[in-house]
Image 1: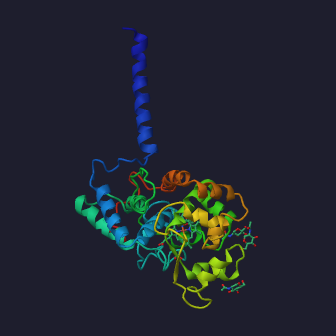
Image 2: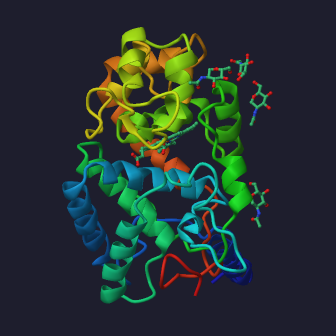
Length: 322
Ligand code: HEM
Ligand SMILES: *[C@@H]1O[C@H](CO)[C@@H](O)[C@H](O)[C@H]1NC(C)=O
Ligand SMILES: *[C@@H]1O[C@H](CO)[C@@H](O)[C@H](O)[C@H]1NC(C)=O
Ligand SMILES: *[C@@H]1O[C@H](CO)[C@@H](O)[C@H](O)[C@H]1NC(C)=O
Ligand SMILES: *[C@@H]1O[C@H](CO)[C@@H](O)[C@H](O)[C@H]1NC(C)=O
């Protein structure tokens, strides 16, 4: 036995332990099998509630998908969007982009109740949103992707953050690229994620100016929409974001943009002579490219600043901190 080699071994061991330590502490990473041992029944239970909710009302799939966006863009994917107001804390639900608009909170409550029955205090509300968003897309005929899990829940919400970080539909493309870049998402990610508008509805108040005043809109489409969205009143009257298949997760939203049938000002921004036109054209003729990239982009969005390790908490009730 060579003394040279044995003298190296304590060093090797120390290095090995240091590497292990650094991996464990420095990067508490999300992973697909986070609940495999602690709550194997969670994912099937969540899927069942989502399937039932979407079967009852297809639009709910769209509403649950949108929740992921509005959660992740405000202090990261931490379930903050689900917190109700308290005397001490103004929640995000009454912020401009959410008030009278964001839906699905009751479904999240039902999911949480089911999951708490199986394994109390284990599955975070932030992860429930992520799983429900994916299951919603699948229930609406869209792609499946493997979600990464292990997020923990915030103890507070951020009302002003919801107003500043979720972009308004009245803005233009440069504003959207800026706000997505702030969250580490590229222009290409933005175009792909925005394809979520292939499902769901918008309120008259959000497209009134577009159908009466804008010129980059198909005139027959605009006229037809005016019937249910008068100049005065009817603020909450709904119209589909995708003109043909608003309950099917397909690429038809992009087809609409090509023929100037974007419902929202923000929708048409993506096909308006700018740098995103080419990607819109590509998706409008290639549904597979869109659906494959959508899952990847959702994983990226769901990775925005999660709370992991010992940060935050596992809320017992998604509407309030423990
Ligand atoms: C620049 C970015 C975005 C803007 C300005 C925007 C704006 C809007 C607006 C104004 C509505 C209609 C709300 C209402 O009238 O009540 C809406 C609906 C919706 N948004 Fe977005 N959105 C954006 C990005 C996204 C992203 C990234 C997703 C998901 C990945 C998403 C998913 C949805 C869905 C599914 C609906 C329909 C919800 C329902 O029917 O309940 N949006 N969006
Ligand atoms: C709320 O969001 C804003 C905008 O992103 C951010 O600057 C601020 O630090 C957040 N506040 C808290 C308490 O997290
Ligand atoms: C952005 O919108 C404003 C008004 O809403 C307009 O004046 C400006 O030209 C737009 N910029 C681009 C790059 O489209
Ligand atoms: C949107 O972008 C324009 C420039 O195109 C800028 O002047 C404006 O401040 C931005 N608005 C918001 C709310 O970010
Ligand atoms: C059309 O634009 C004008 C000028 O910006 C505005 O005052 C008016 O309210 C708009 N009309 C509708 C129906 O939104």
